[in-house]
Length: 156
Image (cartoon, rainbow, N blue to C red; front, side):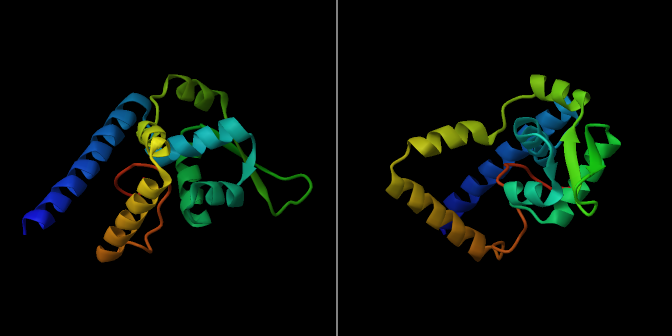
């Protein structure tokens, strides 16, 4: 039972760190991590379609559309119909979003990413395998999730 408790405590620490960061991000910017990631993608890559954004974020188009709806209400993105194909909608950031991104803290996963990339390949694969197994044991392998450390629903 001791090993089980160690795993559960470690998972709880990860969840807690993510929760604290999410609250700090919301307090400082009024945005969630997925909203921030979406804005960063648009800023870095320029105008994109919902489908491209969904693929980039590893989320469904419906989830991305909901995130975009919330960003549009905050006047942080604009949507325009493509002139070449009226079925496609192009999304871009507004000047307000660019200003928010200038002062935004680094994503929580930034430090993790740097340290993970410094690991040997066998260590990376071991971590991926272990975490995948944990997700399966928690019946979470089919949950829609972006490569963003955040808690709660992605479209809040």
